[in-house]
Length: 496
Image 1 (tube, rainbow, N blue to C red):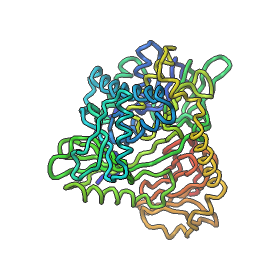
Image 2 (cartoon, rainbow, N blue to C red):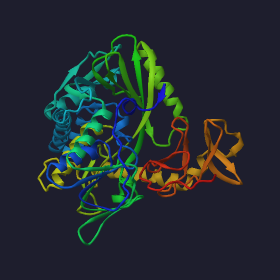
Image 3 (tube, rainbow, N blue to C red):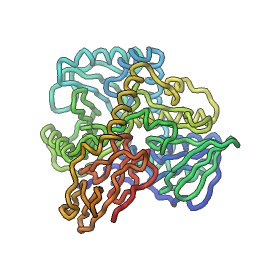
Image 4 (tube, helix red, strand yellow):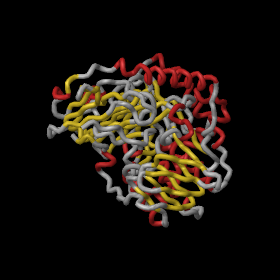
């Protein structure tokens, strides 16, 4: 079994050189995932010179680690959106996401991207009779909002359900192959992509230009789009207005044909499934906030146990994890940031970033071209939110404050670094200092300082991914301190 995303392992994604010089363009896009590349392709059609800056490799972030389900069916959300935001705004969210599904399918066809795209039914189901009323409310709300929803009591998974929301004519695809196609289309049209180019600072200057500082050079642009999962550093304060979550995925081969539908459980723990070829299935679930679980390896074991007890499994071929951010009112932040009129952002997709992200790209391209867009007010990136959202933000930031000042007290005490076994990490003592240590498969030791380079929060060992994770805002670092996930922009201090 490979500890790697099936989508990145089975796609030929082109590679691009890092930025090695200063650059001047009309539009610069930060982030080489679905939102960034889709925005770049759509913006290019309006004539500007476009460049994409990716901190690592194209698709290596959340897009390359999703389930590959493109659907406006987001578990149970529409009844709640109607209650909290009103029917008008809920309808705009629904329209945007259904349009996102169709735009993605349309781009794949128009650009000739072979990405295993297929239409399928999407279910949100429960096995608990106490949840049936919620399912019925969701169906009624979704139908009223114009979505292809219906109530069902049968799905094609190998167990009985009490009730399910059914959405017809949704999509699943191969995210890695799709991103490769978008990247090639952008470059073919005259755009530029720079990989391994991490942005550390973004500022709008008095000359009505945006200036970006990277680890390789500086970039000037008329407008900037920040589509890097969470804006880097302190940009717009979005690190404090969202919460980071991780989830786990498996790609399994079955003895026989896999179910043809896409499905997600309403019951906890979440189980999300979709077909992978004729005899394969993708299973995703067991989500939690970043850093909150000291035994992330157990999340994989539990997910595999469920898969093997539910399906006739031949093999588990790949496993991976993913990260995303959630807003306090369930709607992503898309639009002009508080940083300035010329800096646009898209973040907080709550694990539904393929439809939401494509819709965000449509909105961002419209903003770049100064076109009207009816969805933007609902997704307004500068909004505060309703009373429930404000209460959630207060609670979340109290939790962050507790972690910042007291998180070190809740970590395990250090052990001598010589106690680490091969491929084992943890909090250790080195020369009378408490550090984060890891011994690799060859026996070499790695040690880093356990303070997040973003705002100084303590770090926690992730035993499944061999990373140091920050509970405050979701930054993650490898065993040598390099940034894996922002909002941190700089590496950790090393101690060996």
